[in-house]
Amino acid sequence: MATIRQQLIELLQNQEVNARDISQILSIREKEVYDHLEHINRSIRTKGQKLLVSPFQCLGCGFLFKDRYRFDRPGRCPHCKEGHIRMATYRIEK
Ligand SMILES: [Zn+2]
Image 1 (spheres, rainbow, N blue to C red):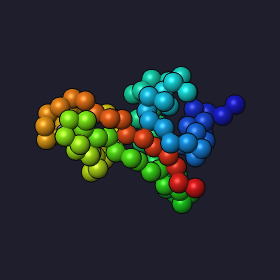
Image 2: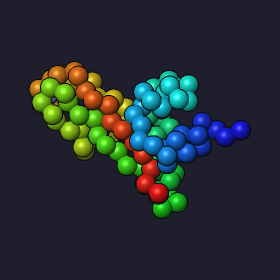
Image 3: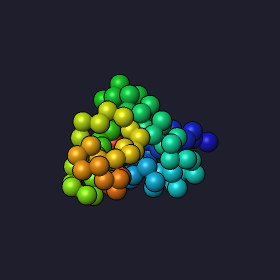
Image 4: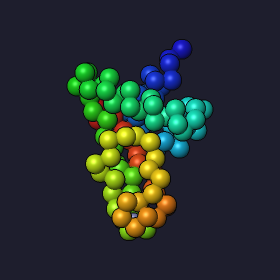
């Protein structure tokens, strides 16, 4: 039986998904997804693989959260203060 983390790595190698997709597919809470992603991001690097992140984006002004070093969902846009943020998506480069 593969661990959640192994299942998540496999999922990310096969498709591009956001935290909500992952949460549904693996039946874990969204908050846990971000913890796993952080760990996977560090661990796969040692194997020469890379977690590609398409960043969160503000739906109000289009601001991209490109320099965000954390994985969890931002609350508000620092520019227009809008709270509608499009989810980031993730995949693992093979
Ligand atoms: Zn904005």
